[in-house]
Each structure stands twice: as C-alpha cells, then as structure tokens.
Length: 393
Image (cartoon, rainbow, N blue to C red; front, top):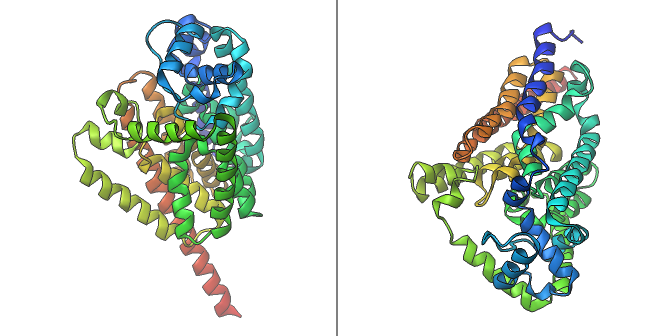
C-alpha cells in the first residue's frame, strides 16, 4: 500500500485540532448557570421528575409541565412541552434527584461517556483513518463535528440516537432483524427513523423493517405502561398540534431541506419535489448496495428530507461522514477524503452564525451527492470486475 502523503498527514492532524479548538470557549462555560438555563435539558429533566413523584399521567399536560419546570428549574416562563415517548423519561429520573444546574453538568458527563462508547465501537470501522496518524484523530474528529458538541452543550439526547445507529450499523451485515430491533429503540426520534425505514421497505429488506416494527412496538408498549393509555392519546394530539407549527423562529433552528426552502420562501412544492428526488435517487442506488452501505445512505437521506431536524439531530451524520473519509483514505482517493472532511468541518461556521442553521442543509446535500456518486462508482467498478472475471473463465 502506498504511503500516506505528508500533506494528508498534516491535514489529518491539523483538522481535528482546529475543530476542537474552536469549541474550547464553549466548553469553558459548560458549568455556568446561563448555559444550564438555556439548554434543552429542562425538556427531559421535568418529565423525569414527574415520573419520580407519581405524576406520570401528566407528562404531556403542558400546565402541569410548566408548574413543575417553574418549581424545579426556574420561574422564567420558558417552559416547553415534552414531545418524546414516555420510555425516554425514565432515563432522566435519576437526574431529577439533583439540582438542575448540577444535573446539567452530570448529563454533559454522561454524553461524553456515550461519545467515548461510540468512538470505541467505531474504532474497527475506521482502521484506515486511524492508520494515517495518531490514534486520537478519529475521536477528535467526532468531538470536533459541530452538531455533536452542540448536542452536549444543549443538554440534548441525540448522541443516544447516534449510538443506536452505530450499533445497528455494526450488526446489520450479520443480522438485519437484530439491527432493525436496535433501530426501533430510537423511537424518541421517530421522525428521523421513518425515511430510513421507508427506504429499507423499498429495498425489500423485510427482516430489517420487521425488526424495527418489533423494537418500536416494545418501547411504545413500555410508554403505555408508564403513563397509561389516556396520556398516550394526549401525546398523539400534542404531536399533531406541533406538526402544524411552521413559524420561522422554529424553522431557522432546523438544518433540513424544509428549513432551507422556507428561508428563501421557495414554497412547499419545490421542497417536496427536491425531497422526492433525493429519496428516489437513494432508492435506485441503494438497490445495488449491501446492507451496511444502505444504512449509511439512508441516514444521509433522512438528514435532508425529514420534516423536523434540528442541529443536534444532525449528530447522526457523523456516522456516514467519518466512514466516507475512512473509505476514501483506504482507497487512496485523497480528493474524496478532502471533500468529506470539508463537510465535517463546514458545520463549525455555525458557532458564529447561530441564526442560519438552515444553511446546514447545503452541506448535507453536498455530502449526499458525493456519497451517492461514490457508491454508484463502486458498484459499477464491482460489476466490471465481475464481468471481466466471468469472461476469463
């Protein structure tokens, strides 16, 4: 194998150092009261507290949520409803024993542990990237990916979804049913999972879809047990009400095609046509791929076309981007590696432009284009080799 050019090694060491360096001012403020109160942890902390004190049936009742947030977090009139399945609130029950500010710091620590586990699970999948230089490069790139760091600072739960996707990716080649069951555990972000499952249904990966149905049914059944059926009906109504919300203050925090088209007032029809085109392109290309490649492609599609996608949700894009960099390095395709690295680093601009998150859809769209083109080329090359081999024999 050809040695790595010196400029590739230099870039591989400099890029994660710069990306993490940009984040340092935010990390230094992690323990501040301001960060804690501005974070989204209150969304999870409050229902966790309500479960602990016997108010499980009220976690979707906004007046009850507001009273408890005013009591346990701050009387600042900044309460927000809980829009997740009840089973997730169980994870946050232990944090409710702590004062809110302390809970925020502890939750950040938990997120770092999750990130360490993700890095450990990805290590065998990033062997070529690790071989370029020091072993700290892959985990530093993971932490340097702006949506990942933003998830920790915002007190969000998106690293759980990234962990689930990594586990599903590690399992899908050997057992699609188990991979689907694992994906079902991510129903707290069901809007992200639906495009992925729809693609696998088109690809006739029925074991994967069946596993997802089974996993989803299990966690949703647990939610019914926790809150009762009436509360789950209330949850469904709440989701329907939120689905009709489209005001700009919410959309500008999103990073999907919907937000991008809304920002430039293009209307719903162009958004629907572009989303459908992305979906169909992925469906055609994915029909020729193996299960692992399909999952990576489906994650990129979901990051573009799902209806609700915030910056922290985009943490899931770290999986296909890092694996694309690793594969390009393994093939000694330095331009492809540079393009994927540019996508990884491009999101750092949002540390300085926090009112323009919708532009993140352009980075994701660019990555999807390069990813789709690369996968198509690999399939064509494999077909040519197969035909050549058959002609020889």
